[in-house]
Length: 78
Image 1: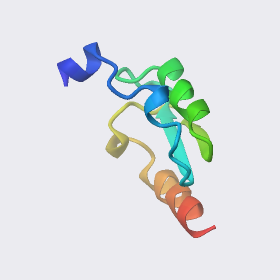
Image 2: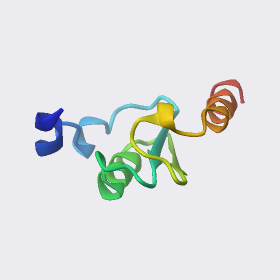
Image 3: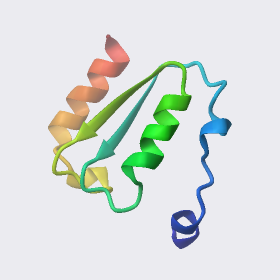
Image 4: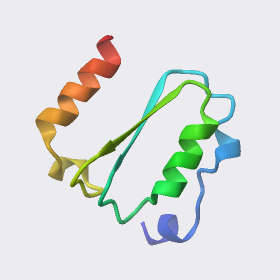
């Protein structure tokens, strides 16, 4: 995990050809991934959506699980 924090392995140029629908989500209190890193990946994906979860840390299991489940259902079944 320390290595991941020190080195940005996933770069925008690595995802340019992914055309699948993707939703990139970030907790607004995430201390592991920055907003800029996340937005850069989102912008590089040709068919992506971006969502920010308020008052949410990096481990999503500490988030509003019902909201997360509803959002996942909405993404996959709409």
